[in-house]
Every structure is written in structure tokens, then in C-alpha cells.
Image (tube, rainbow, N blue to C red):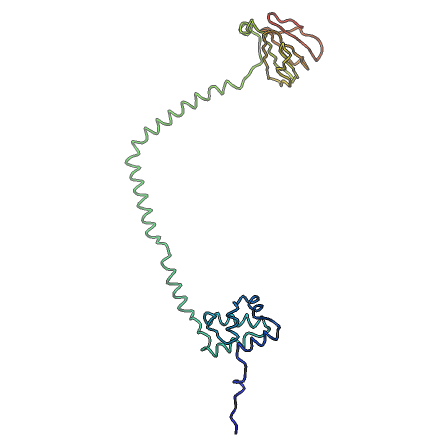
Length: 266
């Protein structure tokens, strides 16, 4: 009877199997390292069955799995062999202690509603007491402030009541007296419709050129002469040197010139 090695003793180790599979796949250590993100020294160590450089059993199992997949091997038998050679898998942590620890850890986070309600009641009682003792003294001053503030509002409202009305210019003796005698003053007011107007001074400088809308007025002054062009002139009231000009030229468009003194059609 001869004594020989058992079949289990002749089986290649984990590192040897991985190395043979790598060579059969035509891969270098560098290529395996690049595809698995396992550093080159650790790949060499695993092929020599040195798992101390993996950093622990958990990392060693992970490196074996990634290495085996990279070279086309089933990783589970290799991981089972590793566990058999290194004391087996660690026992799972019981669920009850974890649950108990989580329950104990969460209890201090509960808010103390009783203390919060007591503090709120104390604050309300203190506020009510302060209001009862100091309310009689505060009322006259607050009333006085409201009365003082109301006066400026009424005063400020008075000018706005009279401001919107901008009546059409009406000739009067005061308007005639207000016109300066050393200048020519021309005032145009649009009454029933809009009108296009153009006004120039005695040097030909343009004073205005545009539309005059109903209710709007324009006043021009010059030391010698005002030249006017009025479109749709029937909608325009004309005052020259404080006097209303009634008799103007015919036609929808008028060209007029006025100087100091009594208005005359130019």
C-alpha cells in the first residue's frame, strides 16, 4: 500500500488559479490592475497567496472577486476557499442589539413638550400682567399720535383736490396786464381737437414742433417776433401779448407772425 497526496492537496491555490487564468487570458499584471483598480503590488501578492497586503478579510474577498471576474473565473468558489483557509466568514451582527442601540439613541432627541408649554404659559401670563399695569398710561400717548398724524394727511390732501383741474385759458384783464411789454408773448391752447403746431423765434430757431393735444397749452416768448404754423387751426385758441386773437386767416393751416404790442396778423 502506497501513501500519496490527496486530490485536495494537488489542487492549485487561489493565487495560482488566478495567475494561470490571467496568463491564459493573455493579460499582464498591469492590465489586470488597470481593469480592477487593484494596485500592481497587491496583484502580485495575491498571485503568491499573500493576502496580508489587502488590508483585511473584507478587502481580500473583494479583490479576489474583481480579480476572478477580470480573468474569466467564477469568484464564489475562490471566496469560499479563502474563507475556509482563514477561519470562515464572520458571524452576522444580531439584529436585536442594533435595534436596541438605535432605539436608545433616538430617545434623547424627542422634544420636551411639557417644558415648552410651561415656558409659553409663563410668557403669556407675564405679557398680560404687563399690559394690564401699563395699558392705562400708554393709551393717551397713542391717541395723541394718531390725532397728530391725521392732520398732515388732511392738509396734504387739499392741494390734490384742486390740482387736477387745468381749465382752458380764458382771456382776462389780469392776463393782459401780466404779459411783459418789452417782449412778444404767444400762448396756444388746444380746445376740441389735437393740432400740429410749429413755433420759431426772430432768428429762425425752432422753439416747438409737434402735436398739441386737447386741454394742453404752450407759451412762447421772444424779444422781437414769434413765427407760427398752425395745422387744424380751428381747434386752437390764440392769445398774443395777453389778448385773444379772434380774427385769423382762413383755411385749416395758418402761417402767422406776431411782434410786441397789439397782435396783428403777419
